[in-house]
Length: 155
Image (cartoon, rainbow, N blue to C red; front, side, top):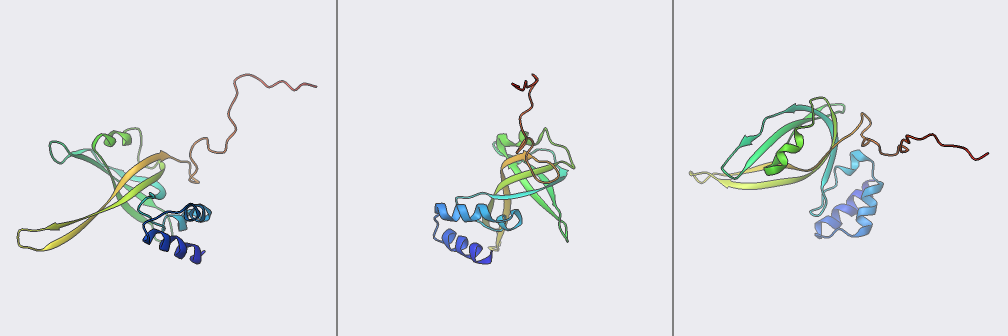
């Protein structure tokens, strides 16, 4: 698999995402898939909601809501994500401990202090937030639809 990751990385460096790169990315295991970043693709991760924070009104026109996602593994990680603007309400129906799948964008910015010191800040901006089961599957994915009426066999 490393050669696929390298090939996808080179395609991303050219600022293009050819269909073959997307197809190769789809063949990767979920753990490897989250290592691949392309400007036109969202990053993905699945974990459990560890901590939910209240909405913060930063300015008159800008609000954000942060939450911490627990990523399981040999060394568990606790990663801070954020929703901004009208999207803050998307987190209202969720509870701590629930398994979720997140598509997000990595954002970075430069800031210069009054003393001329340059600092860099990163944030993980949530694009899509969905519930999953413990195995990371979305509810109803792969399941046969339930029927209210009994199915009659014609014999």
